Image (cartoon, rainbow, N blue to C red; front, side, top):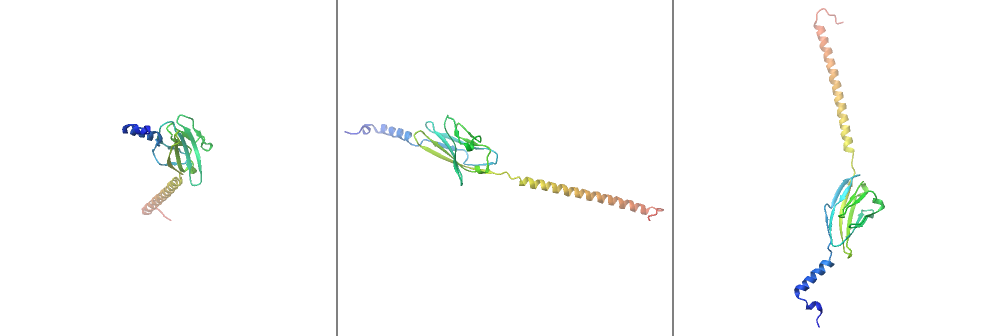
Length: 186
């Protein structure tokens, strides 16, 4: 006696095979808008993602850098987010799985990993790099010093022009007095 699946037609066997593959293969897709994000200190960074999968997935965001690694937040679609104490008040989770980190600090630079896990146990990761830059005020300081030096230089030049004008007027008056007869110059 032959097994039951052999008795099925070839088309039916192909349909069962496609059904099997669609249910037991990884059906998670994660689209990342930008894989590298640069933001200044005290700003916010949006890790924008678009997740498609079958069922209700679990979302987990992790942070990794050279010196440390820790969890940021975890939630399921439609459920409340469980944000770690370190990021409490600085993190905003979005219904589509995206994450916003506010009030950035220099030590927030590193890799942010999103893990999407289905109820069946299959999962997929996406990684994004955040580079937090410090706003340097040296350029502004140099500009202010440059403006002050230019102001002092222009004030000095105006003083010199005023003194030269006074000297010119004095010499002109002295020459006129010298040319007039009957004026004693001693």
